[in-house]
Image 1 (cartoon, rainbow, N blue to C red):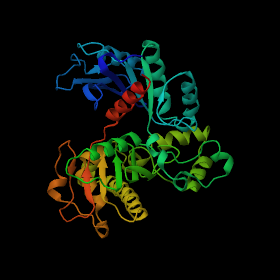
Image 2: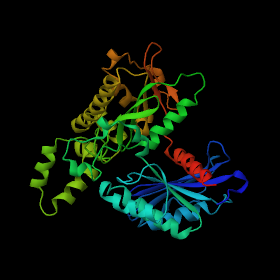
Image 3: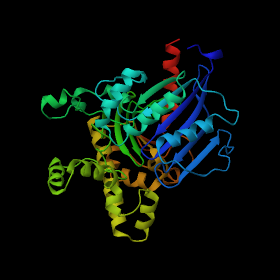
Image 4: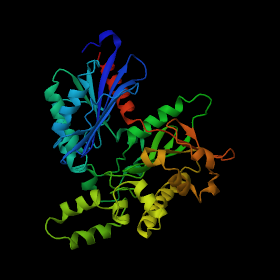
Length: 406
């Protein structure tokens, strides 16, 4: 494929089990620039929500805020219709965020039939995330057979972890089948590293802990910008407490639940672990930290306990990685909760003063979307809030893979 006038337009698809985020990027041998972005939510429900906005702020939805998207294929039809209009440029490639590559694929990949076969086999490692995106890939490859398609994996950033961090203490036959710690939120972590390297006048933090906190949550330890350990493991279900996922559990508890459940116990347990655990199980409220915070402020005991368990689990992970690395130069918050919940940041860092960490209250209340320092002036490790830019990072990787083929 020849790249016209060195300008590349890339459609980025970031799909989940019930939503699809999409962005159109333009790049000319430089950092990708977002032209437009949108989202289809409520896929599979009676009514879905649709948003589409130009980078200059113009609403491109055409007044359609409610749509019918009974499946990911229907949702992709809406995406194609959206990005094909409004005088937007045609895209030369599509980049997909894929959560789990399975044990065979290393690095980000141009998608061909061999890669699709490996992705199909990887579904057993991420049954909550991978099937939806595989369906989306197949549909877009059918619609755009002459466009290049690329898979960018959440795990690639963590391929630098040492063997001591990736190996599970289970029998060798399972390890040989790919049972190991993969780590996730790698595209978010990599985007943070790239953004911080570009900050003028700031020395890049050699030892860093990133807390990506949203519906899914993970904490990652980095040395010189490379992942050395992270809380998520074989799947995105483990680690710290999350919105609907429990994080790490006693294996004996898992065995107990399997014995207690009726019928197809494995499927029932898998559904419970991914959709009915974590904060929603503790609070009895929807998967929304703002709602839980509001309930806790009104004296709801379950909501109060849920918040305490969540922040305690993240605090333990952050503190553990600080100890593992013999101290840190920076603690970074990202993700929906990490970027927007000032109270969670304070509660997570409270008690870590012995590591030299302290927060400036006024800075912490700043709600801007820019990179910002929230630590006190005398805090030896700096504390930062950095926006996660997964789609931007995918566009960077796709453009690099496209140009390397030409």
